[in-house]
Length: 391
Image (cartoon, rainbow, N blue to C red; front, side, top):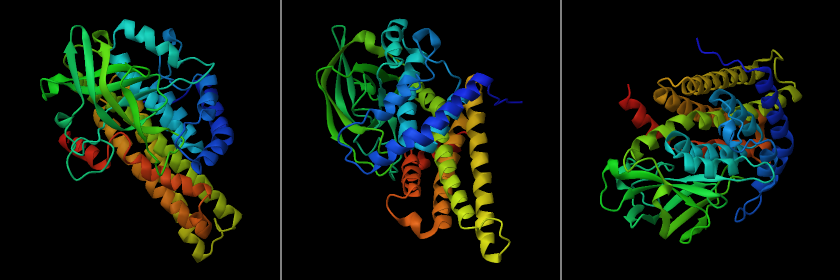
């Protein structure tokens, strides 16, 4: 039987994150939501860096907290209640360090991971996977099936160096990252066996921010398009051997999809609590009148959906912690939790009423964040395709 019980210290940490999220982080995120997104804001990352929470899964030997996936999922959920963008920033750091933890050399780990754990100022990492090429677009819901063999970004081996050329789209943390984990194919081949992850430091010549994306939701998480033009890195910056990159890509996604689901749970919880407060303040909840039954029953359904989504996320996180067969449950957790986030936020607007349709009301942000989340780390139809192949 899976156990999701937290230790006293873990529970205290999660509560600290919750208090931080619903006070300081929430207030700052609301301000940023209405501002220009051309420049990154460091106020929220600084709050998280002080608690060493920007990369919480990094092992203690590198200076990290070494949190389990179950604890990390709880932390992400609480962050998302205050701001889904803050939670996404942490999750994207986790995506970037996963290939390093799974297949990176000791030299790369020693050089890169401790920096992300510094508490004096925030440090970021990012993964550059999706492309402007519409035939390989993990984040956006295209009619064309995403095909990793259509990737255009290339890595050419030349005299002990690697030369990377291409462009990447929808890179969360991309404009602020200390290093970028780039997914590219060998210039000589489009076979899956010639796909690989490479580490590119942010100050490497040829790396450019081609555009800042003005997203509808999760606006506090800086998101860009990146260009790589004759970017030269040493061969030691390849993650793993000269094959196996495709399997590492699948493992990277599977190990982090529950965290995307945790963001969805946090969004849904935040929206639910706003709706519950509105129902109580208007003396609708439990009044016994026929007109109030819609609200009563809807809130009951919302609570049930949120609890089911949380259990799905924690089950997947626990499977990762015990190194079980987690691929299928990870996809299910992400798919279900993001759908619950969309459903619950829409239901919350109905309960709150006309005020919920006024720009600047807190539910407005939850609604947009939930819609945005469904395309992060793969569109829903992509995950359904993968899941159907595992049935």
